Image 1 (cartoon, helix red, strand yellow):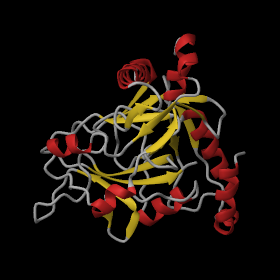
Image 2 (cartoon, rainbow, N blue to C red):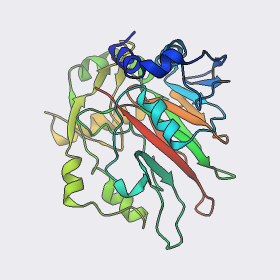
Image 3 (tube, rainbow, N blue to C red):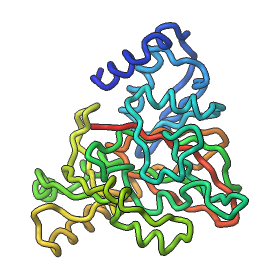
Length: 302
């Protein structure tokens, strides 16, 4: 098992060692990716053996849907931290009070007419925090309040997207690196949303662009995956601008073909854990008049 898992088990050894095993099922959702976890209660300590089983399933299925999780923010943080250090989002005004590790994803306004969370998260296909030097291992999103319609999240399998590339395109992108920037579409999103805040210079400095391989080898399963997205990837390093843009546009289109996508229709108390190293995701959108609120934790990768 991976060093990341061994470290997580070691860090949580006292509670994990004392935890009783739970009876739960992991059922593949069919299609491109995903499995649902049924019968596991994350408000209880998760044993080492149960955690290893979850970790393996996450590597195999890329998206895990934990059903009916009636957990507190502190319990979400504690479970998320089993997978590694948690990353704090640059928009700190959307942190959950008392829990800076949690980003509130919501279109709800408070009594003063101010947003309580990031309302337009996921407008473009992306991998969370790919713009960081250490991009995310994965994100965990827990439903708090769901709209009566809309609000689905789409996930695209980037292992499958890479495997389906023509051999000549695989050879062309082998060894290439791309720049990822949080600012790539930030002002465009601000123009769409009156609630997305203007960044301070300190925040801009915090999200300086990062460069990563166009094709990543997943540290947990050894498989190759595309690692570019329409939201954050700005250019292929070393290529002329026109050639870089044409290549990225082709990769963006190939990476989210329908046969690689799982569409998640949220149920009350779902918590979804996706692998940002092998998956891109997209918010399908929620009607403005319907309330939506979820809590997100993000695990640091390598």
